[in-house]
Image (cartoon, rainbow over all chains, first blue to last red; front, side):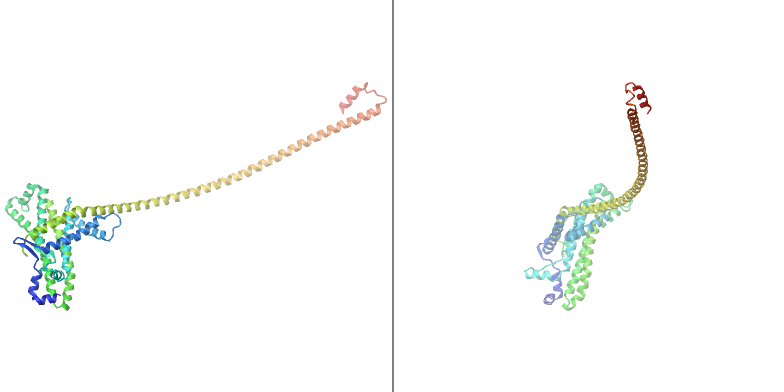
Length: 258
Length: 156
């Protein structure tokens, strides 16, 4: 299929086509419909499954689904307990949501690059980007939410005064207040940007490589496709884990005063 | 690639998912897992306690067995002693009884002998009186010689 598509359009047109979102709206009020659709559907499926497991959860011997879900929950819980020492009802579920959601969205990368776009094309949809995490809007949507939470907790825990004090007097003391504020601004801007760009960059690059591999003749594709897919399993998991871990670390930093 | 309103939509989706997880997924799972952990800990503690109790029971059983054994041997010794005592007692009683029987028999014999002697004496006296009567019938008036006869009778 990719052969045909690539040959019909030429390589650069094929790549561009694969990297174009299905959009609706004008100017800023443009919506990437495919990103919204896939992230919502994947969220519904995976958290619906988790909900099913949670609803039937009991302290007896867990069945297959419950066992799997508990494994994930326990992993996340351990990570949260290791890095975050306060008490919060939000952080652990937040970390679980990030890890699971980012993981399933990244995992869309493992589907053949032409599968969903071809299906969509057959249904009359011109463009389709199946991996929501290759959309900057999604990664920034999440990282800015986390950024907002960092500020919310910083101010909630330390108070406005405590927070202002921290901004002005850490890390170099009272004689370098302007430097401290500068450092703080850079640090805080870097947090959401690095969070969003790391995930986006990894997934976008991965997707790109898959698209390039799809340009090869069909009998050569497995040679690069199989190793890259296997390696990508690691990246998918790692990026989900990193996003979760950094969120936990940032929020625990927000809870502790310097 | 441009940033657009999708960002807001994604932030909302994200918030909804986090809220959902916080509300419906995390608490029941955590509760179940904690409950299970507690149950397992309790079970292990109980097993440990059971083991300990078993050990104690073993110890007690062997103690009781030991006690029973010593008691049994004590009882046996006591009963042996008592048996020999009984034998001894019955031997003594038998001897006594025998002696008593012998004494009674001897007394009876004595009495019998005495009675026989009395009877013999009576008969001899009667015979003597009868003989004397026969001899003296013709010459002795029984009334006149009653004193004499009585005296003879007493002497016999």
